[in-house]
Image 1 (cartoon, rainbow, N blue to C red):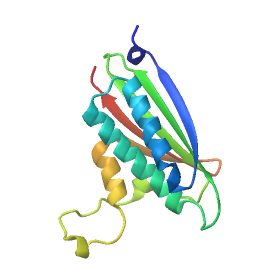
Image 2: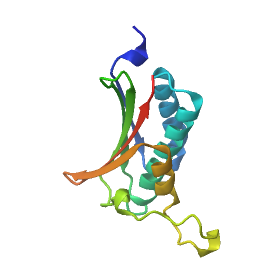
Image 3: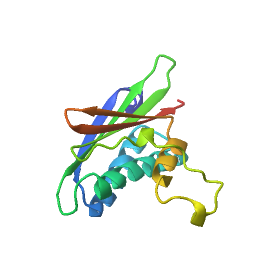
Image 4: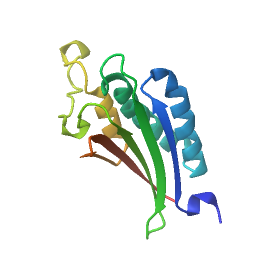
Amino acid sequence: MMESEMNMQKSIVLTNNTRDVPRLNAFVEEFCQGMGTDEMVAMQVKLAVEEAVVNVMNYAYPPGQQGNVNIEAAATQSDDGNTCITFTITDSGQFFDPTAKADVDITLAAEERQIGGLGIHIMRQNMDSINYRRINNLNMLTLSKQIKN
């Protein structure tokens, strides 16, 4: 039985320091490779997860305060034989629900747009679903993508 045919789960804990981004990218790439995703899907997932985690690293905690960012990757096989990969990003920083943000107007010239929102746009464009929950003072952002087998 190939590894991609079973349920799989892995996790990593990073600090809220962007120097940990290479470790994050290696974690996502390794997980996607283990699931047998094609290069394009792996790139989309890596981009979306990196955007979400870097936002936490940069904004979840007050300046100078160290905090953790937990990333859990899971893959489940659905009844139709396809696989869903899910990355859940958890932090104990300030409340922030990125799913409540309005879509950014990408038709405007860069100088006419408000600052911010592009990371969330990138997540929405590259993943099939994005869900946010606040449980026990934890931010939990879940990014999911269906993979055709």
